[in-house]
Figure 1 (cartoon, one colour):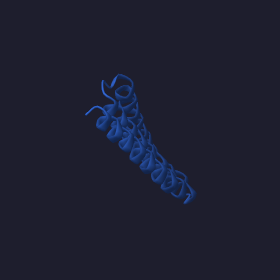
Figure 2 (cartoon, one colour; figure 1 turned 90 degrees about the vertical axis):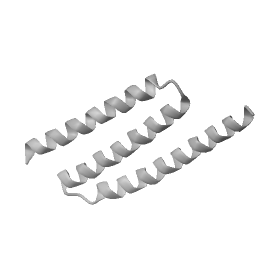
Figure 3 (cartoon, rainbow, N blue to C red; figure 1 turned 135 degrees about the vertical axis):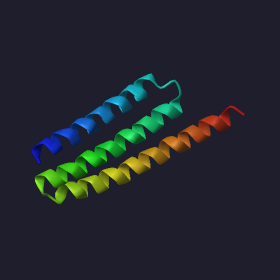
Length: 89
């Protein structure tokens, strides 16, 4: 079962790497917001897998709080982009 943890964490790390690359190289601000949201979802997955590995429900509570904050962050960025697009009209 140890090797499966290495595979899962390696794939999640690869996903984080790709989202960071998209965040840095994204030509538009909307691309950066989507990559940031994807990054947050992968981090929530990592925290959930850590809860499974360490057999601790505390990590699930942390994941829930992080998910709520990530959702609020996405809403704030979306409202910002919406206001920015309305100013150009």
